[in-house]
Amino acid sequence: MSTRIRQISQDEILVEVDGTKVITQSECPHRKGRLRFGVVNARRMSIICPLHQSSFDLRTGRRLSGPACGPLRVLVLGDEGDEGDEGDEGDEGETAETEM
Ligand code: FES
Image 1 (spheres, rainbow, N blue to C red):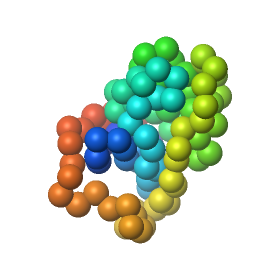
Image 2: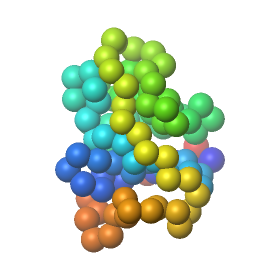
Image 3: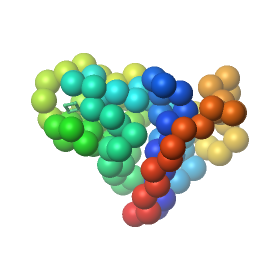
């Protein structure tokens, strides 16, 4: 399974897990940890914040574990080529890639 996190704007990241793309906020709702540097669990479809290790479901935004805080805002785009109006043309920041 391959995962990738890309910063697509100041406030948003694009998380890719195999063919599924999810746009979510770049800052953790707990204390603004930078989720671009988070760890994606492809099997659980979740992301872990690098600051205090809260885990969030990438399909729903729900916090699965870690310090109490609100959910992540998420927009699930689905498979490759199905980006709708949230495209990332021309505004790509640095990338972080991991292979699992
Ligand atoms: S900032 Fe993300 S868990 Fe604390």
